[in-house]
Image 1 (cartoon, one colour):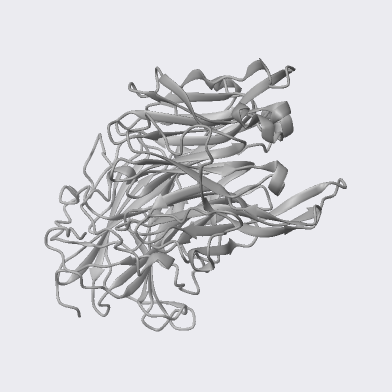
Image 2 (image 1 turned 180 degrees about the vertical axis):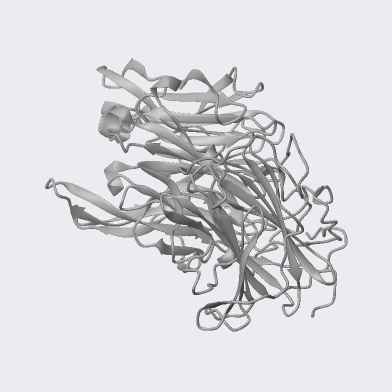
Length: 618
């Protein structure tokens, strides 16, 4: 589906532009409480936050051919940790969902019980991601007598939620009874349970068991038809170590009834073999399933843990080594129901998109980019950008949550923003918290064709403008938008910074849009502060001062009381028929918050493009 923004064409401008903002987190704040534009006085300055930009209608999979220039950047100001002050103790397996009314539900389990796999699941609600209402147990562990007639514990783990098309919340969790978990005669004491809410999670009803058998990590997906599918890690320890592949249940009545029926084997849909040298046997793998329905498609794409081998660990025991695999349904969204010793055919799986990793999560932006999160060998969360079919991912990890922990999750909140959650155990397991933050998508943007008045009012700029974000290193952050007319390019930079200084500056780098990573004689650099252009340079083996017509129309609008700046920079489109954009922010931990994947002396493939259009190429 393609829906264009008014007065735009598909013409591509070809110039590489890098904006580098140097904003300090620690320097002294300059005096003054009011701002000015060309000497005037202003008592308020309304800037547009990134979450209010990129609101125009867009083309689905618009960046399918440009995905490897896209990236995500953490919004440092959104980062929060939830711990004891929020009634969060020993948390792990955090999952967050954005509801249609703009609120959020967060679920987690406590890292207690056998192997720290949890016993109780909890949840909290929020309207703004900062203030959370602790709601208590979603499911509470129970003291029971097991089928052997002995005292036991029923534990609940891996809770997750899904908001259905009708607005209801469906919650799901796996349950197990500790001492009969590995006994094939007591599968009814393990399984999956669901319940629902019609008031955003304040109350729940309709709890029911929908599957019996050892299992973990249920994941719900609602199809456009209204059918709900529940994918989960099957675990038959008596036949295959601990992992047995991924199974599926389905409901066609909104989760009231499920098939196969309770007590029957579920549909086995994803698995492959691996050699277990410890037990001298072939086992099955593919677990922790997290899937999506690909844009403009019926096909499912799943990120999975794939067990490769079992090795002797430092303590003399055995540990499984995992990679991250991708597994796909048929094009029409159907699955082969595997029987006997059947496994997923090689043409519908990619066994190692990441050679060593675990606990994956997968989402897709409307513009086509897929985002894969996983836990690395360093016990940190990692991101990789992928293509629109989830069949290719960048070889370089992108920065994710800056924490040491495990079992992270993602949730897409809008066209350019994803939430990430993860257990943060930097201060030890007993002091673990849940870390949360927004991550914003930066990709090639389309400049708006308009006449810019250059009068300091800036009211012609709109929330439908496409924008880029920088601000993952510290509190200082900024957005950038671009407009174009027949003669000029216009850049609007809006800065939030609690520590303004006259030494702050930004770079805009312009360079031909070609396949080379190197700067050329056509590369230009504009360095400016909030009051003036500081320098303009041309590249000739190094940067040399040159005047090529870029200006600021007057002093920027600065409001010191609220630590806000609005800056406009403009100059001729010629000699470039296009602009590509990237920028960085210095001053936070003495490093750059940079979108490029290479130093600024080498312009890299990883830069989003700006595509002004509506006028002939020059």
